[in-house]
Every structure is written in structure tokens, then in C-alpha cells.
Image (cartoon, rainbow over all chains, first blue to last red; front, side, top):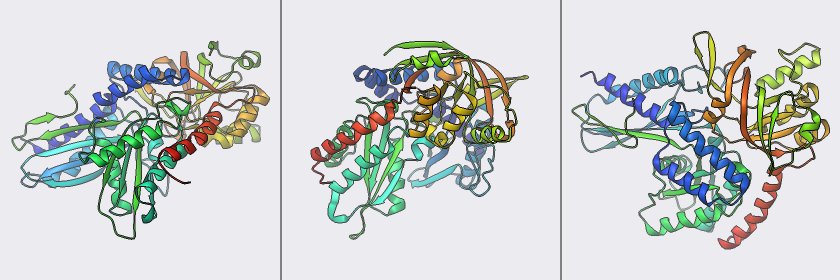
Length: 294
Length: 201
């Protein structure tokens, strides 16, 4: 068995699945939003979204032309073999997907503005590593568009303001973002850790299914409270007005320094693209979020 | 809410009938232009140089498509709108110089563009962000690509489209701007939300 080949194939498959087929929880939430939206203009937008999701599946085309920045999350078993071959396999899969799916080339060198043409470059695709027990590996890809990335916000709350400060931070971020992140969006929120850690945690929560709430009931309650609050803004689908601004809210946290209260809001557009697979030690592969379509 | 189906070239008289919240479908020629194509077109106009085609009565589309070459022919694979605010610095001149009647994008545009649309007779049609395949299916033919040296997303793609939409008329030619209206009510709602969450602003 050529491990590098298996890894590259799996990465290619999850990348292709992610950009074409939206996860079921997102599709269900969009359908529910369409049924419940009261603004005519908002309803027109949600109808166009649902039609588009169906057409993407039918023609096996990327659901959005902005196929985003490619980020992998790898949970590697401590006993897994060939971990040193994973990153090059992910780069290979990214190049292949750019050509074959196709994906829009979105990797630009910051100084010259030159596009690499294949979605790879220094730190792209980005790989987040986590070591877990076992001899298998779980690989997840997130491809995230520029519109929703541009309004992600990290900041520092006055610690004395506590959770109230966090709520204000989030509401203000959603209002300021307005139409830009292609609402209805999904919000990933995190606090604590440090400026970098809160943003990393916030973005990572965007991988969770919408119906998976924080196991801590207090945090789950806060998720619900923020969800209801931001949906009162009236921003609506595509910022054209309506009651559906956000499809879901996830919150995570890390312990913080007594004098620091880092907070982060990561937005994802309605086209929330993610896909996961598990590679077992014997080389067998299970696709976790999508049934494999070749 | 009235549904309009217009064919290019679109006249000033036709476009003046549209009001915000109406829905528009365009048939005919739609030309993509992002930051770079806008800048170059305006430079050409200043220097008295012709641009690749007349845009009089056509629709300009803020879009960086995914386009694939099948044999000798270009095919639009995914072609949703990009954020229009980046073009706000060019659009008033662009409407004045080239007489486009419809600007298609997402996220809305500001006062300069709204004023130019009122003055010269044009509308902003919001195409649903991310609805890239819906857009691509309405593109029946890629007639040509101009200024390809700007790269795939920034080049000027000339599309022949059939019932391209739905476009939500979000800025009309009478000074109305739906995005600005929504923003105003969102600001008012924000105060209610603060109250509900016990936030003192």
C-alpha cells in the first residue's frame, strides 16, 4: 500500500466533496429559514440559495465560485505511521483539486500580489495538527471564502465587563459585518487563551454541525441567547432585510490571564464547506460527513 | 414587488421604471469587471482609447468566475458575485462614461454610486452571494474574454445570458438604496438588542 497515495486521494476526495456538496445540517437549516422567512426579498434570496445548492449537486460544480482558502485539520493518532508524509500529500491533493474540480486559484503572494495558480504557497494549505491516542488519523478540510473571512474579528474586552462585554462585542461585529459575509452566516465565538488562541478556537467551532451545542449547559444557553439576539438585527439574507441573519452560533473558550479577556468572532457564509474522513491503520477509509461520490 | 424581464441593450426609459425591491432578470450581454478592469476601462476612457466593446445599455457584473476551457471554448463553471463595495470608487465614473444600465453584485454600494444611478439612469441588482452555479447555468455562451492579462478573476468576461437572476433591485434610479435603509433599521434594532441583553452602550 502506498500511504502517500492513499492520503492524497482521501484529501482530494474530501476537498471535492466539501466544495460541491453542503453538509446536511446546513441544507436543513437553509430550508427551515426559507419556510420561516417573512421578508419577500429575503425569501427570494433563500430560494436562490436552495436552487443553487441543488444545481451544484446536479452538475457537480463548486457551490460558490470563491472556493476559498484551504485549511486542513488533522487529528493524528500517536501510533499512526507516515505522519511526515501528510503535509506533502495535502499539498498534492490541493494542486490536483485546483485543476480537476476545478477550484479558483486563490493563493496570492502578499508582497507582489502574484497568484501561485494552484492554491498553494507559504503556509497554504494551512494544516492544524492535533495528536490523539490510537493508530488512525482523522482528516477534515474547511474551505472558507474571502467575504466571510474579511469580517472576522478579534479583540480584547475589558475583563470587568465579563460576558456582557462579549455579548456586545459579538452584536457589534454582526452589525458591522452587515451584508458582507453573505448572510445567513454561522458564528464561531471564542474567548480566553490569548489573541491567537481565541481566534483559532472560534474558527474551529465552525466545523461543528449546527445542532451540536456546547456540552456545558450554561454555554449552550449563551449560544442560544446570542443566536436569538443577532437574528433580531433585521440584516436578513444577503443583508437585504429579513429575520434570518444567522443559522447557528458555536462558543468555545480557554482559560485566560486575569488581566486579559481576548474574544474572537469567526464568520462563515451560508455556504459552510467542510468534510471529514478517517483513515485507519490498515489503510481502510471512512468518510464521516459525506457519502463518497466519485 | 414587480418582476421585470429585460433584454439588453436596456434603455434609460426601461430602467427608470424599476424600484427597489423589484426583481429583475436580464437576457442578453453581461460583462464582468472587478477592481482591475474598472480601473483600466476608466484610464482608457481618459486617454481616449476604445475599450474592447461598447457597454451602452448592458449589465456589468462584479464577478471573478471559475471558467474552464473545453476544447477551444470557454465554459463558465461557477460565477457568483463578489463584494461590490470595492468598486464604489470607480462606479460613478464608469456609469457616466460607458452608460451601463445595470450593475450586478453583492453587498450593495454607497452614496456616490446611488447618486450616479439617479443622474444617469441605472440600477444595482443584487445577485445572491455564493449562488455561483445558478449564475453559471444562466450563462449560455462565453462570447469572449478581454484583458486576460489581468488574470482569470480580474479579466473582462463577455457572457451571453438568458434570464440571469433573480436580481433584487437594491438601488434604483430614483435615489433609493435598500442596503442603506436596512442599515438604518439595523442600527435602531441594535439598541433594542442591547436592552434585551442588559448592555449599557
